[in-house]
Length: 114
Image (cartoon, rainbow, N blue to C red; front, side, top):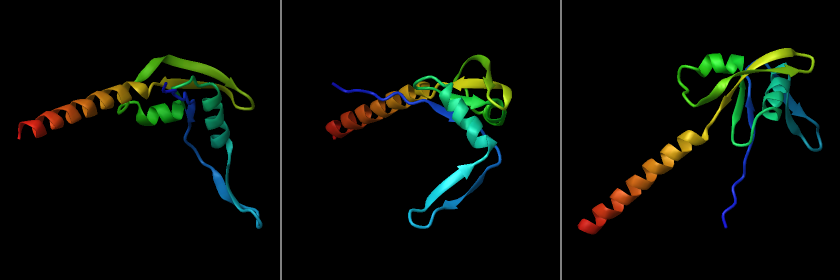
């Protein structure tokens, strides 16, 4: 049987500080309140969904149509009340799968006819 993995995703935009830490085992690290808020978006998201901050929503709202429900206000430690939105990326996946399946089916039938 095929098992699927349900991933939660959180997105926020903002300023960050980043750099490489360590000499023996260097690691790239990103810091800042934008990183913390993105982590809170992920923690309050749902499996298979993307929770985004109002800042990100305002940036993409006109080009994205798969919003689920209304905005949700969440309380974030040390940041207060934050408006968030939920995005369902699976709707487009179904459309893409259907399109690709039809293309493959049409392509196969076209080859058989020749």
